[in-house]
Image (cartoon, rainbow, N blue to C red; front, side):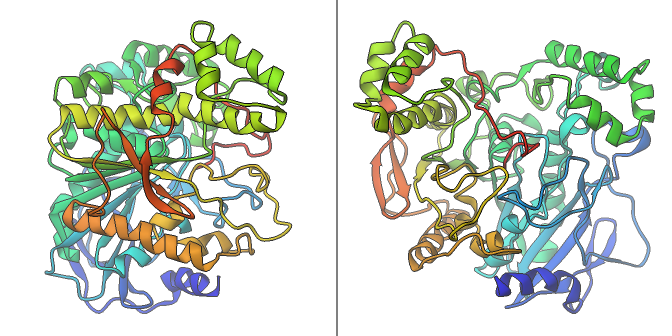
Length: 526
């Protein structure tokens, strides 16, 4: 923990980097961090989306005079804040609508080296998230010879709002402003990353949860063509229920509902309202974030891939053993489990019960987790992998994360039960990004073991190898829809068949409802 605190404090306490870097807009100066890494934090990649620019596409930055001191993180986009007792609490961050900034970590003296570029897109259900969270930090990967960039994008109703007036303003398109921000960040990287030692011809974009869905949406986004060359998706995709885009007309109806709830006369009156009021009122108005706007999202991902219109890049994707975004309702006994399955799957119940067997009450918990995982994220990731393998020319690899983190004795969280959470949603991120210490930033929550450190080295090595060569591991078989396999990442690292792959078609008939979440959490976990 002490080492990570030192790295975090280095953002403010370390000396300035030796020479300013000239980029579009002017000169910027970063900071020298520990162990041979330089950092540039709060680098503007677009104009602040304020006043008349609220709910408009991101605009190019305006030039500045003198040297811009990129020595501290910018505020995260307007959103609810975290509780100090949440599992993923990494300290309070400032919030603002003025939030379109990115962070860069690079090995010292990287200029001119053409290093692989790794771009992180954060998760948070498209409602929350930050490019500056400690578990997303890039110093530890940069130390291994890549240029690492984390980009911000607008979230919540300020980042994802369709509305008839916005559609007219946008020439027939509205919504998905956060996706536009992601594209603008990638465009900035293409124009500027060489100044930091990065190769704009070798960009790997990666994300988790809503960030993973964003990566898949970048694959179907015609505006993102040529901006990245490899993709990594961790747990969630828009292939299937819950996250898939809805028609623009549906989004416009939801935008009008928010206008009514705000008591506003139109979109200009909504622009006049304080952002925190929009945020507060929007919390009570149903809204699907992603719409088929005809520009950033031209159709359902399945249709875009089937037409071979996707951005065809190599993909590494996967999910964790115990995450799920579906529910069978309250189930505690074998009888309740069998009744819940028969209710959810009236046509295929007996086949589902055979595929997910439980012999007694004690075995029902495992079966319920496996079914609800495969109803949601398991199917989402399998469908993405299948579409990419069938419609693309580039390879796909699948992983399955199974490690239950070693919690410190007696540790409690407001949103997370160490006794039951297992290999949870987001649990793989600190291994892939070499940021295990981030979870002990303010209190000891994990007692990491030598096995965890070895797994961290293995998993971050997959990312580094993929970014450098396009192949994460020589003995990891490519995804084949006819005989799909995954690389398990846990106490053992080995190749197995895709979990319950034969049962996935049986689960498609269920009407999916999200699982219950602790009321005290107040936000989706990322």
